Image (cartoon, rainbow, N blue to C red; front, side, top):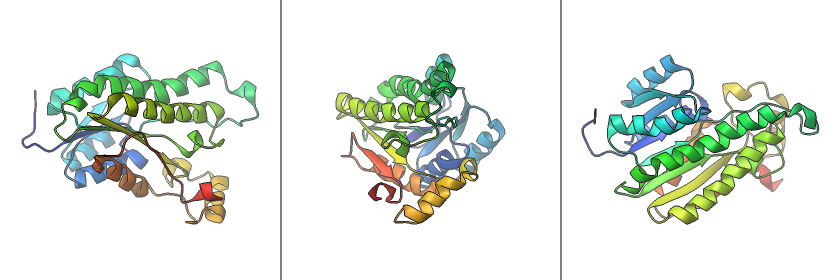
Length: 246
């Protein structure tokens, strides 16, 4: 077992080699947390980021149950503790909401496997270690504005995020006071994945009071604040620049 010196907390951030996940990993590392960087692919980028942050990189396909369950154990093998779990990894497939036939059973299965079942498996695997965290364990699920309002890239995607929001509340009620569970639900975030989403960018510029989409650092700042708040649990915090107001 390779345990680094010191008593600094350890966070596992899934899907953390780009976009929101990378921003969260960087922010937590800047706050003094040792970070386990994860990706399904992007191993080279993951190893480079982990080395830069003084953390550790692990590769796993969260759509495969054995790999999802094993991810927590591998993190514990390296650091010997786990204090924070950020379920950030997720997938999406654009499908027009009115085109019901286009959303196949396989689409539903894959989106639910990665966006809902994998976070559940990770929470289950992490729970004993989180309960041992000296300051109390923390789970943050990165969900979506699409799980709060009837929007999003597809009906299966929005449903998977809405379900994760409800699971967040159920787990918060079940696991307190030892482990706090919250969700951050961003609207549009300006990342390479969304750069061609012209209509969505226009919507946020024209109608959101902040007149822009979120930046990954905006989401990371909120995730860090949620982790730092020792009394907050069971909340789904929408981060959409005020678009819900309109």
